[in-house]
Image (cartoon, rainbow, N blue to C red):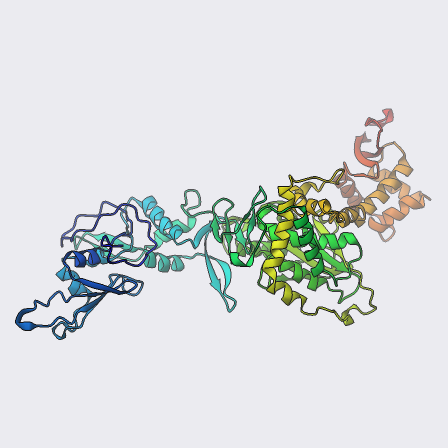
Length: 627
């Protein structure tokens, strides 16, 4: 801070660039020409005291014993000294107190007057002048000071601050408001404007119009873009691990963790990965998995929780069982501990698309590492917002109570639990089931040998997460070996690489096995197969219309077609033609077990369809023209 090597001033954390010492300001000023003046790298008051030989010694951080400026030493007058403190939050211009009796009541303003300096000269803060016509420069300067704190970012079009709240000192993302920005910017910088009547620059508060511009400045903002928060080291594409906390501009993640808790081998091999995988499996030792693939899926969920900030998308994991008390929620909590050391949000599953959209948008705005939908009582339906949240890196929506639309990152691991429920329709390819099958008649009465498992996992989280990262890192270091003839999960290719392939490389079962079973056994798919089979048997390769199906239903003895229609399209013994027509229209192109519903040439000016078998040429018979 000072040029004299005998004195070392306290650090201020300002990166102000080249700034010369301010000269005394005249009483009549010209309008300011500069919007932004960076914070000073030297303290003009201390430099002037030092130049005049008044500094005696440093007594603490930013605190000095100085000689009394007004003590002349005449007539044997003793100088007991004075105390000067550099500027801080409570004293923007610094503070001064003289121990000489005649100087009682003299403070920092008296000292500045003696040194021919002003409070503006004494302040170490940057200065922002609100000059008309330079809104862009004012906003740019304010954003630069906010970014310098390392706590303000732009996320999903909003300005957010990283702060800690609650008894657990939990890190949260808080959207900035005009009042909060006013308080923060007043603390960070001295604001002023030119008063034409007084013909001088005077202090002011940050005007609201500039604060509103900062909140809306999405295109040219100087604030870094924040994609999410990671509670553990982040895996790099080459297999190395970034163990430095704080903001990482490379991936836009804010690392909130203690690097001392984690120990990942610098260049792990397959033996390291095998030992780490066995350690993860030991955590799951008492859970009653139905098959080895379910245990593998649970380990995959641990890997996914540990590397989720690295993945653009990831499927939802669903723990299911036949009876209550089987350990589904407990398993979800153990998996969630690999994503966050804190208790994660547990929310009920939404009932409709509108509720789902609002819920997910509010969740993703806060960027929790993991969210659990606990105790589902219905199947996991394919809400549009949920499908987007799982297969897209971001989703858009309108903020509640505003007309603003935002895009939020979906880098949150979604977990769910339920008895005898699971994914249906389009959710079957987005959910990895984990099946539990306890042998006890009443699973809730089972006595666990390790009742404090969750507490142990949270206490040893650093070591266990390090094991999960070791498994993935070793696979990457080995050249990312792929398993031959592995069924592809098209929507989650990177997840398959990092959370599925390493386990197959170590000889474990495919964690996505239940996902493919769900797709094959989906009730909607089974019904489609039943309908296509009945229609093919009834109409062979010929065309059919809704009217033809209704006629066959009214007089047909074909139990296969009649039974299929009665289950879905009949009401009071009559076929619902409108519903039947919509079903045919929505299923065009659907292929199940080699049968495909295709459009045919119109039949008597009506939409016509036919069932095409695999290998058949797609051409309409000659009798399909209009009559």
